[in-house]
Structure formats: structure tokens, C-alpha cells
Length: 416
Image: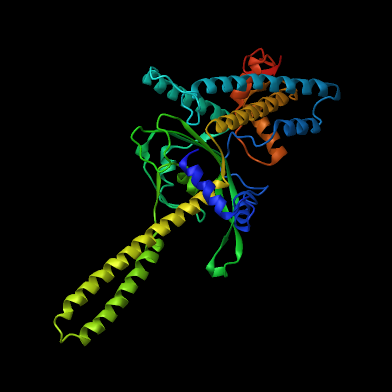
């Protein structure tokens, strides 16, 4: 367990032993309940298809576009598709386990010293490529470096402004899917701190894959020779940087003013009182040394007070960050691999079933363009969401399973 995880556990223990205290419940509700509306609009058209394979199959049958005598045949085809996709994702499990065995930070196995470092670097490169393949198949999009850097130093009302040192990373990849508009609760003094709902652009799922440099210095004490995976849910777009390790809290101007102004005011008030005493005893020259000493000690005292106030403010911001991430962190390392392979399994199954249904219910061989538009229309009618259907990927899967074939002209598709 990393130092950051143990810190989170200590924080949660201070709220309530069972995590059932009112404060913990309020945070859980703010982080997990009511965040995404059922009719949440999508900001971008994505390849991600947010529907379960079973629900899609039942919906397609309910459309009554298949002849009654072919319903059993269609269900059998769906089962064959799921079996074939299962075999493919099973190979993902095998490949990932082989590559991750020596790169897992949570492993309890020992690695011989004779293992070549260059071989480890090659495994890291292959593992990063495999993760990219799985996540793209699961409907994720890799964020560009500029998109990540644009989030640094800013934060939503629920995030914390941070400094990020990108030189710490040997490899870094951030993926996102579910580009939607969620809702969160906030209180404003202008409305007498009454609770109100506000729209927040978020990513429903985010995955961070990274490897640190050998000479990194982070508070999390993460292994540099390992590949780390993190999965989160419902992350505001402006708070993507808070998912990265090695960050430092950036205090806002308001926070700095809260630290400096009280200390400066107290110091000036002390100077006023000392000046009154100094004028009373001005005639006695030997008191001037004592007055100067008092001035110096007062300045040192208020400097120390400001310093402690600075550290308290940073600790408060770090605690806010820990509270936010506790309820939004879904899994780490090997657990993330299991989740993203399952997500790729669902995405591939849905794509193949939908494409096969569209071809099966077409009265003539269908082109790639018409097939894509028909699949997108069916999905829009099912869940009222615009998507970007990956028709080429679905066709490759169906061709490999010998369920479809090109027509005579080679430009259209029909059932095999």
C-alpha cells in the first residue's frame, strides 16, 4: 500500500470507524450521488457505446424487425459473438499478466538481479502499447499533453490548484471517456449559503498509466521501476491534474491574503503598542536596547505564526484533495487492468451485435457508410445519445468469425 493510500485510510478513520458518520455520508453523497443526470448531454460525439450487451440484445429483439422464426437464430448468433469476444479478451488477460509480472508495484514475487534492464524497458514499452490498445477498444480517448497541461494551476470549485512536475515521469498516458455534463452541489455566500445545483463538464471514467523516473522525489514514495495504473470516475475536466502523483498545492491569492493580512495586522498593532511604551520611556536611553529587542522578537513571532498558517492552509488543501479522490478512485494497478479489459469486452460485444443486427435486417447488401449511419441511428433511438460508431472495427470482428462476407462488388456486406 502506498503512502498516499495509508494517508487516505487515516483521514477516513478520523471521520468514523465504519465510514458511516454524517461527514463521510455527506461527502459520499456529494461525490457519487446525483452527479450525472439520466439525460446528461454529451459535449462530444464519442466511440464509447454506453449500453450493456444484454440490454442491447433485448432492445433489438423488441424492435420486431426480425422474423419471429429467426429470433432464436439471432440470439444464438449473439451468444457466438460473446464467446468470440471472450476469447479475444482472454488473450488480453494473458498478455497483460506476462508483461506486468515484473512491472507490478504490488507484486510479492522477487526478480533475479541478472534480469537485463533493457529487457525491462522493452516490456514497459510493450505494456504501455497494450494498455493503449485495450483502452482505445474500450472507447477511451487519450488526452494530448497540451490538454493535461492546460489543467495545471486551475481547478473547479471542488478541486485544488496544483503544481505538476512533468519531468518526474518516464512515461505518462491519460485516457478519458464519457464526456458529459454532470451536476454538483455548492453553496455561495451571495445566496446565503443555500444549496444549489450547477452544471459541471466531467469525464465519467479516467485512466492514468505512468512510470516514474529513477531519480524522482515524490511524497507518495512510488516505485520508479514499476508501471502504475489508476482509474477514477466523475472527474471535472478542470481537475485532471489532481490525478497525477508528485503534485504540489498552489495557494490562491485569497489563501495568501488570509495568511499575510492577519499576521501583518497583528504585527502593526504590536508596533503601535511598543511605540507608545517607547515614547513613555524615551528619556531613559538604556531602554532603547530593550525596545529594539522587543521589536525583533515580535517580528520573529509573527513570521513563525505566518509560516505555521501557511502549512495549515496547505494541509487543508491536501485534505480536500484526499477527500475528493477517495470516493472517485475506482481501482489501482492490476485491478485497473481487469476493469479496462472487461470494458473492452463489453464495447466489442456491443459493436459486433449492433453491426450484425443492422446487416441482418437490411433488405440488401449494405455499404460501410450506410452501416455506420444505421448503427448510430439505432443506438440514438435506444438511449438518445449521439455516438461515433467504429464500423471498421466491428466488420473486422464479424469477418474473423465468418458471420458476414463481402458482396459480389466487394463494396457491400451481407450475411455469410
